[in-house]
Image (cartoon, rainbow, N blue to C red; front, side):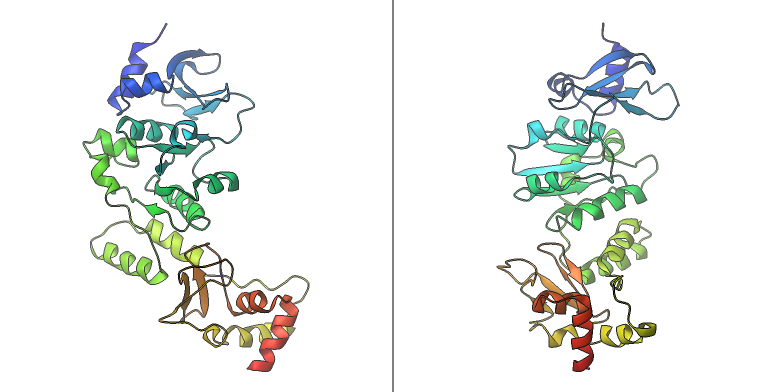
Length: 305
C-alpha cells in the first residue's frame, strides 16, 4: 500500500503525479530505512531508496546491492536531441515534470563514464548541478570531455542549492534553461568570473574550470631534465612558432577539426581545444606534431631556443 504522505512530499518538491507514475516511483518498506521512496533505475530491475524526509539521518539514499553507476533517465531521454544533465534523481524527475528530458548519474556528481560521453556527443547537452564545489567539479569533469555542453548556474539564494529547490521556491525552470551558455575560451570564463565577483555572485564553478583548463607540466617519469632547468627554459618557447594561429585560433592538432577550435593562451603558453577538450603546453604540442617522445621533444626544443 502506498504511503501517500511520501508521495505528497514528492509532489510538493515539484515532481508531477504523471512523472511519478511514468517512472514507477512507489513507497517501500525497506529493511534498513523503514518506509521510504523507491526509485527504480531504468530497466536494471534494481532501485535506489530515498529515506523518509522526516528522518534527518544520512545517508539520504541507499541502493540495491549490485546496482552499478547508471545514467538514470537515459531509457526515456535518448530519443531527444536536447538533454539536461542534473546531479541527482530527484532533480531529474523535477525536470521531466517540466517536460524537460533529463538524466543523472546514480553514483553522484563526480561519476560520469566514457560510455555515457559517447552517447551524448551527438546531443545538445546542458549541465545543471548543485551550486557547490562538488557540483562545480562534476560539471567541469564532464566539460573536459564534452566541451560543447552548455552550463546553467543555479542562483545562490537562501534555501536554493539545486534544481528542485529552485522550482520549489517558485523558479521557472524553462526560464532558467534560457540562461544556459557555452564557454569557448578561457578569457570568456575569466571575464564572466570578474563580472560575477563585482555583483557578489559565486565563482566556484569558474575557479574550478579555470584551474582545469590551466595545464600542469608533469615531467615524464622516465626522463627528468637536469635540475629542471632545461624544462623551464623549453616551456617558454612560443607555441605560436609551431602552429600558425589566426587571432589566437587554429585547427586542432588532436582531432579532425572543421572549424578553428584550438585556442592559444599567450600568457601561459598553452593551448586548449574547445572541440575535443584536449589541452597542453609547448612540449605536448611538439610531441603531437612530430609524434616523438618527451625526451626527444625536450632535446629538439632546446636546439630551437
